[in-house]
Length: 213
Image (cartoon, rainbow, N blue to C red; front, side, top):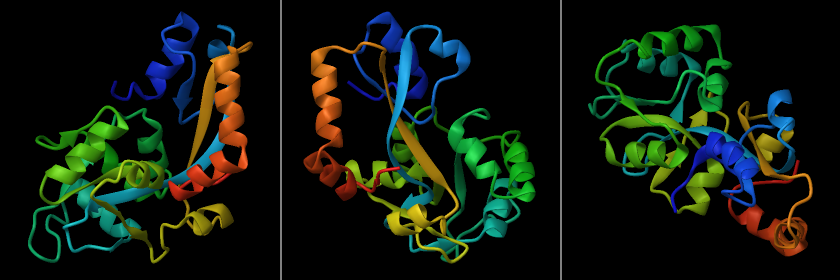
């Protein structure tokens, strides 16, 4: 089964389609009325990523804005820059817009450009960043590490995309992960959450680019 994304998880739990969902945001007041609860269990970095084979290791806010507008159209090796976009209201898009007013304006311009790649869920975005020559897009350190993706998380304004820099606030983009369950989850769900919170579970999270809030 592929990823159903945050919206799929939040819709699936109250319907009984899934016992436990994983979301990248908490629940709204309206969603709480359905009898669900959200518990944050880890954090990771939201990163700008490129395919590992692209010889790029860093980006600045100014360059990112120029990539989105098309003002900066090629990487240093001459490969065309191909941004991969997400939905305007998506949490990833909101985070990138928060980096600067210029980036927010540039993203709005990019959404009107023809021919740019678009992805609905994280896995689709990762697929396109891996496979479209010169692509750059938003991912998370957790996804890149846990799925063994052929992607490179870029330095942002000279700051390394490491868990330590995320935890200390040196790196600006943090992704929060929540378990979405019923208020009275089944014993199996409770056991799973207990495992995640155990030392063994925390070791698994740490190996996959995440840390405890």
